[in-house]
Length: 311
Image (tube, rainbow, N blue to C red; front, side):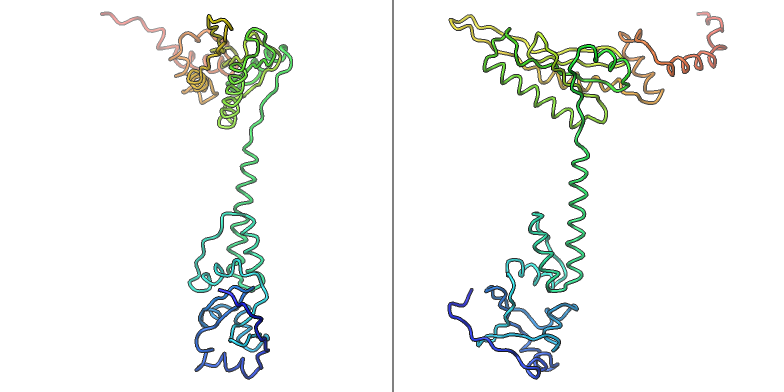
């Protein structure tokens, strides 16, 4: 709803303002506001409920400008005024999701001197800022392996489980077909997803030193390789000898979860892992493990020296 003709603007006198604020009139108990050519009808009590610019307007402390039809003119964009007016009515508000809209609403709240709304919007902006900072901090770091000599040292010194993806963009074995290109992108995409989710528990390495396969996954725990998953090529016996590369996504997920068994946990958990994985029982133990074993053997010496029970 907007006016099509130029309104006749007049300044309201002090006596008129006092009449507006009078206990018996209250400006007819309703106020007509024209905010940037957006028209609003609200009650006098709503506008003067809090100590805001509106209370100053209708208490004689500020000059009020009206047109010939009685609309109080406010030279401000009325885009967010409906939200502000609803907040003045019942004290609740649904804050916008867009950060830009929040900043715009904050400017309007400051213009109208609505302190409680200013605090709400600023708090929401601070919360959103902290959340965005947390999302940035949660980005993972991936080691880029550029020399084959680096890997043995990393595997021997890092106590985390390790997942390594070796990629080769120049593999003539598959003639770099469209299928191999698609497979390469799928592997990289899966690697990125896993590294973002599990970077706190697993060390992820991207190997670009060259491989016979387009993509090859290697899984390490306790200082040794536990599993390996590589892309395989299927050559169709057609005139063009088309190639297709198989993507073992489910198995990659499975081996990634399996390698989590080799995280450094408390001693009881480590003992369970070693007890339930006999094929890795001969893996090299750390100095802490040897100290733990010696302590365990000392405490149980009397039990082991007992003669076997007769059956």
